[in-house]
Length: 160
Image (cartoon, rainbow, N blue to C red; front, side, top):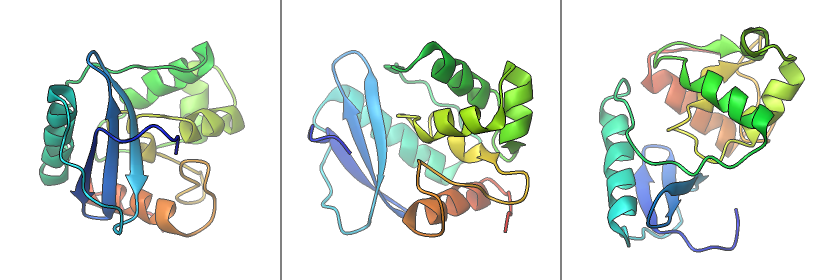
């Protein structure tokens, strides 16, 4: 998490979601624990982002329509574009995505973990060949992996 304040913090079934946006685009979405204070959206774009994320919590197949500040390396952006092609209710392994974009699984996993716009760029849909894999550069069990499990279950995917 950066020190820039959130433009909104909303309730989520797994805790909270923080949103950072400027006048033109959503810059960052962050998963937060449940004890973080709610912040009502401070801008029209933060309000729209919050509304669309809440709609996703009701209807996992919904499509986001938000202006995004996609900042990352050319490779990261290629990975994130590939992730965007995975429909709700489906998963690809890091290896499948790597083959699709002409890379290797470990590099894909690193780019997935650096995704600044989870949910909208659904990196939770990329899993390890033998299970759920890590999430947001947080390997092992814990809050982030539980968020990933919830998101996948919400979309009808069950992974150990």
